[in-house]
Length: 367
Image 1: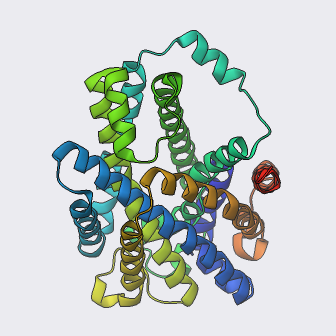
Image 2 (image 1 turned 90 degrees about the horizontal axis):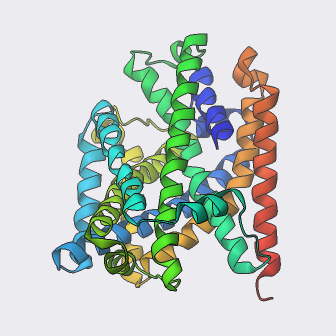
């Protein structure tokens, strides 16, 4: 995860373009639009699933129908993205990320058997089955996700624009200090995200799983099931985590879709711009949100949709990782700032492991 995100960050900083922009100028159009198609499919499913989870959880707390909150959350995030500045959005995301620590507290409040937790952490139980392999692919897909590749590179470009580097020529290149700072940001961010994921798994394992509740199909069911097993504290923190995570991820999902399509097509694209000055960029962003919203009226179960959207991410990520490795190793794009041998090796290994996991999942289906 760190290796792939570092390559994406370096792409944006050194080339002055986002990932889609690099693909547009260096590869055939078919490659670009194939990558964008994979991204759009994965992102729309993800947006729909996150909106459903947020709405169901809020409905559980308030008693008001989830179908009321789904469009309200959609409008809230569209308003944030359309009429707020990039710097304000970045600051909101930075502070909102603190909500994720609710999952860590919920993990401790679930009172796990730490001896069993330690054994399960270092000695995982591996099963050759479609269910196990689908979960493995989902874990890969929810951490090494296509939307993060496009968002990471695009945000490095946005940071440059924030510093006044408005032209491609001024954005090209990066100093050793800038690359070092970016590396620190990426590594700390990826470690934090995996810490949060660990405690989500820990909380559900030590409450729901040990009590035989293994068929959770909605966010409401997950939160309600926690209350009698781990108490009100864990229940409220877990519910807060679901809402906070959605508020963080949905704008990023919609934004990365808009960056990819607009940059791929050569349209003006920036959260620095007002909607009227970049109408097609904001049009794509709005369409992604609306499509995600509409999925909630097809009566999919939120948790099932979240799970399978992660599986979709896990299946679609490997070809995109290959493109990231190739682009970040291209001297015509990166000059003398091409990815190191270690980054390239980790990138190829990541694509290979994820592809093998996906193939194994399909091979065991129906068996």
